[in-house]
Length: 121
Image: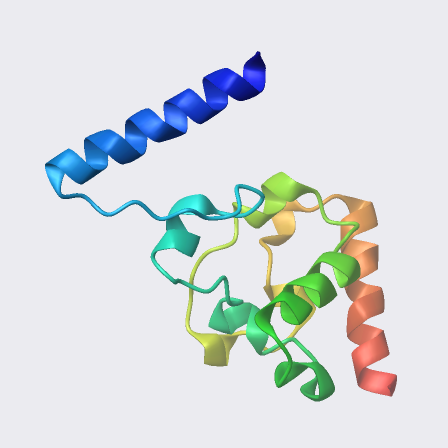
């Protein structure tokens, strides 16, 4: 029954769009639908891209996101919303990515470890 209602809805949307002269794009709903329909890519912002190691920079943009998600897994999600967009040249380390007052002690230690890994690696 639910599949029937789903198919009826799709047919109604396509029919109405055809009458109105509007294009309908079918995309995989597992991703950001509007951006995928407009052929946008979900590339890393320049301020994050500069922190990706050189061997990963030429890969697909999802590889960059996977690296960031893995390396920053200890940072709480809402801290990312407190980052400010700023000049990429001012971003010189992991510690300058987030406002220090927004981080917990565990997150500060994690960023310090990332920084020391970069220095000695």
